[in-house]
Amino acid sequence: MSVVWADAERDVVFAQGADAAEFLHSQLAQDIASLAVGESAHSFLLEPTGHICTLLRVVRHSDDLFTLDTDAGHGSAIVERLKRFVLRARVTLSISDWRVRSFRGEGAVALVGEGIGRAVHGWGGPDAIDVIGEFSTLPLVGEETEPGHIDVLRVESRWPRVGVDILVGDIPATAGVTAVAVSFSKGCYPGQELVERMDSRGANAPVILRVIPREGVGVGMRVEEDGKFLGTVTSVGMTVALARLDRTSTVGEPLA
Picture 1 (spheres, rainbow, N blue to C red):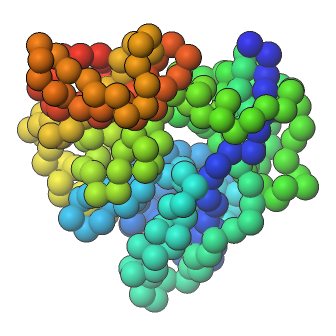
Picture 2 (cartoon, one colour; picture 1 turned 45 degrees about the vertical axis):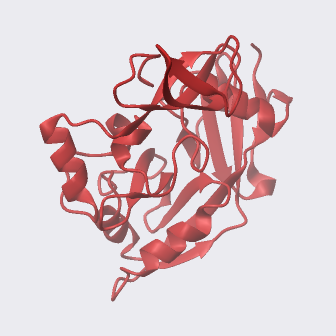
């Protein structure tokens, strides 16, 4: 597939100030303190109970400016949740008008090139990259496509969407992305106790996101095994689909 691009359906939040790095490190499940300028990482933002507020991506644009981008409709939740814990930290949080431009296709990372605002998509790899920045500064390489096409490729890459595949209030283990959205070596953050407890015990969430074959399924379709209802299909790609299934299910496979 040649490289295609579209402006993704994402909300972008600014976190800016002298204490932005330290504050985000204390609040997010990912290790933010070690994130260098120009780097990005996925992270859960959790409630103190350990339940998901949203799944987001952090991009460090400078020493004191970070963007937090998440699926459309969930940006305000980031601001509201983080502001509850700002206290005396020198950091401001606001919804931004910056865009997320997604590039997909063979060699997309090399074609887009290096620069501030480049961000890893999903599990990473050479064929997918996003760029976060002001509209006028975003690169134009490859062929323009529709956001819906990018979303189909998201499913193909086995990456969940908030509000579709994973829901606000889920526990992190449901999402199947703790391997890249959680640091198990950093210090404390709100919600850590539930994450660490489930990981140490090898416990499964009651509902788990899994990958199933695309053939013959559609969004909202029931998934059954031996006549037992297991869950529903939430997203459909070209060859695979994502489904929220009971933890006892042997249908499909993990996201990664």
